[in-house]
Image (cartoon, rainbow, N blue to C red; front, side, top):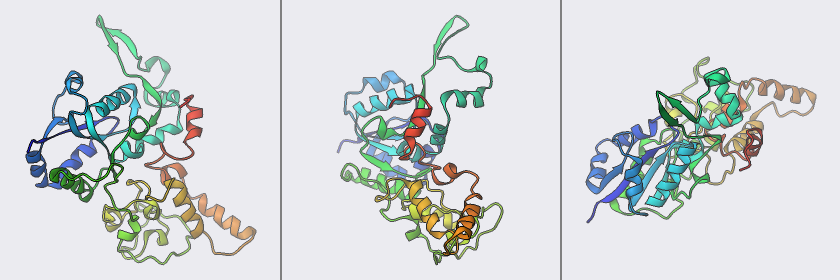
Amino acid sequence: MAKAKIGIYWAASCGGCDCALLEVNEQILDVIAAADILLWPCAADPKYADLRGYKNGELDIVLFNGAIRTEENRELAQLIRQKTKYLVAFGSCAQSGGLIGLANQSSKAEIFQTVYGDKEHWPEEHTTQNDCELDLPEFLPRLTHLAEVVEVDYVVPGCPPPRPVVSALFSALVAGDLPAAGTVFASSKNVCEECSREREQKKITRILRPHQHEPDPEKCLLDQGFMCMGPATRGGCQAVCPAANMPCTGCAGPTANIRDQGAAMLNTVASLIGTGEEGEDQLAAEDEILSQFDDIVGTFYRFSAATTIFKERYHERNGSTR
């Protein structure tokens, strides 16, 4: 049989997803035996001309990690979509914008001011240095996830995707038995259903943080007051963070029946706050607990701020008409 032709590409990302590909250990040898990697900027030195030279649909599958932050990211996503039969949103940034999607709370000018300082130091898209003309890709008004730019066939969630999830994708690829388009390579259950901790759904009376209080390793983190995103987060990671005595941060995105991960988790927290009594005392107690959250968006939308149902507010603030 002819080897499959695969590609791996990064856009706005940290490189962790590329490292995650090697977490499958010796299984990577099966992948190399079954496929030729034609594109992998992290490990090789491909040129855009090489990618443009492939026929449309010549690549069998491309794992695309990273979000769409610049015009270059968008153009490459569109070009890769033309060149591959199947496109995979690999990792949280490609899936939902990831951590860097939190930047959508700020305008382009605010981001540049924070990073570069005074406007005179901001990078210019077109400039000349040492008699050479330089063109930088446009910094887009807002960050988006991959599916907002091109059609995506598969999703491999996680920051980075955990070994069992990556292994499932590779097994399907090596066997030549990819599932129906639209498949998410992860559990349909939430993280709580994979967690071995004892949950009693106790009322939350205070908000705790792991660096300030050591969690009881046997009891549900949410019961103890640690903000664990497990109830609203897709499983498949085998609850690796709670197993390490750390709350789930929601990197795998929402479960299949949840539209907005942060809103779903806020609803869960609201049901657990307070004593169950009614009246002004109850409202005061709830307000006191909620005031303990230093960063609501960073807590409940850490990986999905770019895809929240409230994102239109960010579009308006950033001057985007999309």
